[in-house]
Length: 88
Image (cartoon, rainbow, N blue to C red):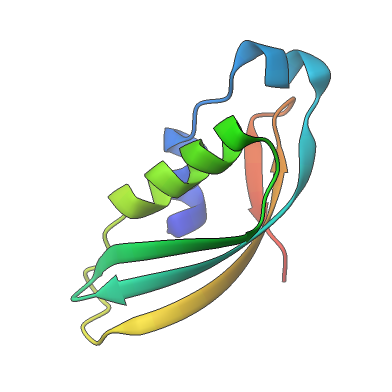
């Protein structure tokens, strides 16, 4: 669900799309009562992609998550394809 949300809500800048900025992102998400309350960026790309992915993560609700949790997620971001995929 989070990956779908990111793919629908992350907006890439035209310059990033033209330049084909792509790579891995590593983040730690903290949730409280199903809301993302904190995002720690451990590895990012450009400042604008980082900000955009963090913004979209903070907007994401996880109603099935009742307890407070921390999640580590690794993503592959491809601005040319406008796609974000999980790294498993």
